[in-house]
Amino acid sequence: MASITGPQILLHSRHPSLKLKLKHSPFLLFPNLPFSAKHTPRRALCSVNSNSKPHASISIVPDLLHYLNHSWTQFHATAEAKQQLLAAGFQMLNESQDWDLKPGGRYFFTRNMSCLVAFAVGENHSLTVLFDGVVLRRYNLGDGFHLIAAHTDSPCLKLKPKTASCKCNYSMVNVQTYGAGLWYTWFDRDLSVAGRVILKNGHNSYVHKLVKVDRPILRIPTLAIHLDRGNTVHYSFITEATLLGFLKLKLFKYVGYCAVTIKTLLLLTWGIDLVFLFRPMNKDGFKPNLETHLLPLLSIKSENTSLESKENNSALSSKSYHHSLLMQVLSDELKCDVDDIVNIELNVCDTQPSCLGGGNNEFIFSGRLDNLASCYCALRALIDSCESPGNLASDHAIRMVALFDNEEVGSGSIQGAGAPTMFQAMKRIVGDLAKNYVGEGSFERTIRQSFLVSADMAHGVHPNFKDKHEELHRPVLQKGLVIKHNANQRYATSGITSFLFKEVGKIHNLPTQEFAVRNDMGCGSTIGPILASGVGIRTVDCGIAQLSMHSIREMCGKEDIDIAYKHFKAFYQSFSSVDKMLNMDN
Image 1 (cartoon, rainbow, N blue to C red):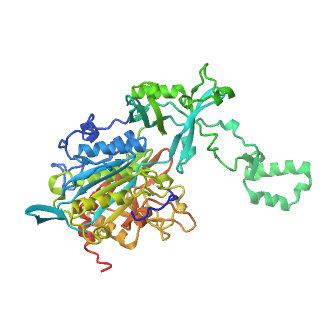
Image 2 (image 1 turned 90 degrees about the horizontal axis):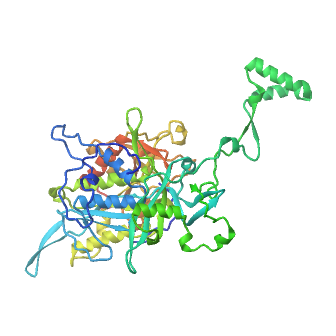
Image 3 (image 1 turned 60 degrees about the vertical axis):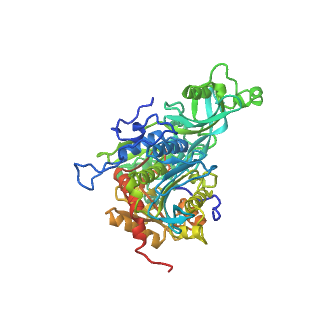
């Protein structure tokens, strides 16, 4: 979740990992699946056990943990989603090439390898017509899209274009903050880097590759408490009322007598020692300078490194933008020569694996839950809702997932929700399926029949700070998806869209909760208002309740993951019938 600052669109393992039984994971079923491989039928990832009750299904939580542990960056999250779609039989498209779509087909494309759009075309909306003696199946104009949108990025530290820095005989790495992170949580963590690099690939040819260094190579150490007393000593009274009583006795005019008397009276009467009555404290708390205090430490500077000298700093070339040790670590990971690396785009990442926690293993402890948990639930719901040939036979709509980048910084990028990516994809899909039968207002009619679920993590009530939530709107963990409301349109939910989405859950016995921010607090936002206003599509904002949002280590409820997955899957399978129950604007 982030504040909206970008423009609106216009019409348009070496490291120890969690030991889980993941034998049904698509990543393990197809560990070396090439992107061009033909589809191989797979076992249902979340199917009903023949020996279990009809509604008992396998949890997707183990696969989510696997996804989180492999998705350190937005690039890796998109690549893992791509691999999963290919394993499920989806066909990859290219935005710069012609599309040939068919009813019942399943497709996807990526943009910048950090944004992904996948969709499955329902078969029941195709009409059989005779054209020049040839029987054709064409798109029934006006059938809508049922979409779930989320974002692949999370607040983090990103490497600057020139990262090499040296201080006090340490090799440091220059970074810049991305999004609104809780940056104090990044101190004293075992950190590494991940992202993408551009490599030479022969003569005048380059290739894009992902890289992830699984071992801790970076750390941002905190300053010892003994060295952090502050430049100015501030004093605070523990019991103001007690001192006020002594002031009324006018004892302070007797300087020598006062010190002894007050201390004695306090100690004998209330057991308070004067030493603890006045105490130095830092009123500002721990507020690191984001430019000078957040530099990760890479290593002890080698003897032949002299970047601190002005002469060498002025003579830096593009090859010297980064520490040679960092470049060597990357080349070892990529199994290439250092000279083959021509550019890097890396995030600083926490190496601690995602895992279950809590006394009953009821929580998920992980980084990047905001918003990879939503991405994964939406993606799995799409895949599992159309994995069998008959799943799309009776569907009039087109089921779609859109995963965007750069939500945490306003979505104003080519791979963000502020770009017309989804709008253009919907228009191309309608045009290709309708062929030459596009009539007046065909695309606009399709938009009016469409519905978007904007899925982004929600604020669960904090037991130590419950007053930060409005009294009647305090979502809790393990109680289902949270419907987000804001009268000032920071969320796109309306009375109509919330009713329809909750009705889907009600039919399938899935709980929902409500959230509205306090009037005396600011409200975050999502990609929901951007897409709703830019495309003109009905939208509901919802999310999984979590704690520690934007921390390097977040937490949510394990059951909420399965509830979200089931709700999203039910949305794809049931929304067409639910939508017909409400008649409006007719």
